Image (tube, rainbow, N blue to C red):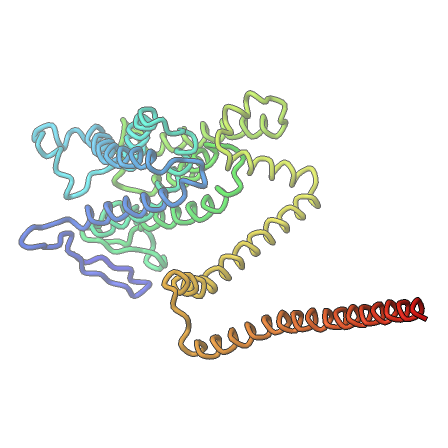
Length: 393
C-alpha cells in the first residue's frame, strides 16, 4: 500500500501489519499502545506537581486505559452498526482499526473517575493530568490512521502543499490525521506550560475540552469517513457542545475566583497546595507586580543556592566517606606515619621539660632557707657563749 505527498516529494510503502514469529500484529495497535505508554509516563511524572499520590493515581490511569479502549470501540460500533449487525464477533476485532476518539475519552473518564472514587484520589487534579495525557496519546495515536491510510479528508487541488495520495482516491486529499496530530501537539505544549500557572484544579481539563473541541469541529468537517447520526456528523456536534459547555464553566469559575469574594467556592475548586500557591501568586501578580517580581527573584536565588549546596555536597562526599572509613578502620596514612610519631615524641618532651625545671627551681629555693637557719643557730650559740663568759668575768 502506497501513501504519498507528491508536492513534498515524499512516498511511503506500508504494510499495516508486522510479522513477529509468525504472528501478525497491526501497526495501528502498536502505535496506540505507544501513545498510551507515553501519556502514562508523562502523567506519573507530573502527579506530585498536581498534589496527587502517584501510588493511588496509577490505578486510576490503568483503569482509564482499559476504559478508553472499551469506550472507543463501543462508540464506533454504535454509530457503525450496519457493519456489525450480521457478524457480531467482528465487534471484538480491532486489529483493522475502528476506534473512535470521543468514545475513548468518555470511556477513560468513566472508568478513571470510578477508580478515583474507590482509591480516594482527588478528581479535579486528576482530570488536569489526564487531559495532558490525552493530548499526548491523541497526537501519537493518529499516526495509526496514517499506517492504515484512513481518517483522511475531501479532495484538494493538485498544487496543495500537504495534499496526500491514498489508495482508492484519484485526487489528492486532506491529511486530516496530520492536522489533528499537530493540533494536539500544539495544545499539549501550550497546556503543559500553562498548567504551571493554572488558577484552579480542573482548569487544564476544561481548557483541553475547549482546545480539542475547537480543532476537531473544524477538522471533522473535512473528513469523508465521519460517523453520522442522520445527516449530522456526530463528532462535530459533540465537539461544538464540549467547546461551548467548557467555555461557559471556565468563564464562570474564573470570574468567581477573580472577585475572590466566595471562600467556599475557592475551597471547592482549589484543592491542592500546588494550586493554592499558584492562585496566591496570580493574585499577588495582579495586585503588586513589584512584590511578585521580588518574590520570584528570591525563589530563584533559593533554588540556585540549593543547587550549589547539592553540587558541593556531591563533590565533598567521596572525601568525607574516605575519612570515615579510615577512622573506623584505625589506619593512618603510610606517608605521614613516621613524621607523626616523631612529632608526637618531640611534643611530649617539650611538655615534660617545664615540669623538671619547676622541680629544680623548687629545690634551689629551699636551699637558701636551710643556709639561713644554720647561720642563725651559729649566731645564737655565739651569743650564749658570750653571755656565759661575761658572767664568769
